[in-house]
Amino acid sequence: MERSKRIVFVSHCVLNQNAVVYPLARAKGAYKDIVKELIDSDVGIHQLPCPECSHLGLKRKPMTKDEYDADDYRTLNRNFASDAVKEIKEYLSNDYEIAGIIGINESPTCGIEGEPGIFMEEFELLLKRAGIAVKMIDVPADYHDDTKSAKFIDELRSLLVR
Ligand code: SF4
Image 1 (cartoon, protein in one colour):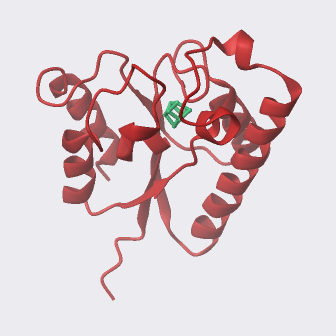
Image 2: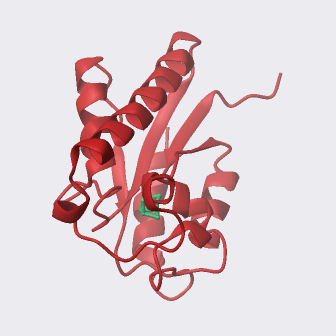
Image 3: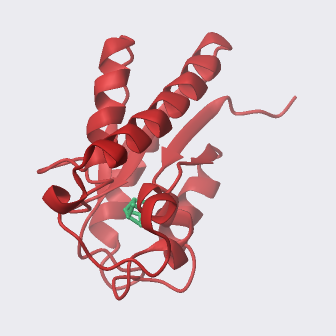
């Protein structure tokens, strides 16, 4: 048995920048420096859904949190958050550790620090109600592999350290 029994939950676009709203993609596919760090630390990587893609698809325009914040979008995010909390509970009840949750700073949906996005608001609320404390960090808004990754990669290493 070779399981690390450690899982990190990541916003969908950490692994798939093709889901990002035009013209904000910052990599061709995954954020390679982040993914390399996750792989090297032997955590399992759980990719969260992309609520904006599910709601408005790939041709959506950039929108603010206020513009997204309608009942149907709240419900979609609450349902996604509920699914994610169920998955976390299942891991925890089987003696896994949730090493952290990685969001996307300044996203109207997946931001954690500063103004939280709608999905992360719902996710944090449900985690709190379930009595689950998990470390949460954001990929910075100016993150870019190679050129602007060093500071965040240090922060990520601190998150992943046991
Ligand atoms: S920040 Fe969230 S909603 Fe925006 S592209 Fe990434 S996963 Fe999708």
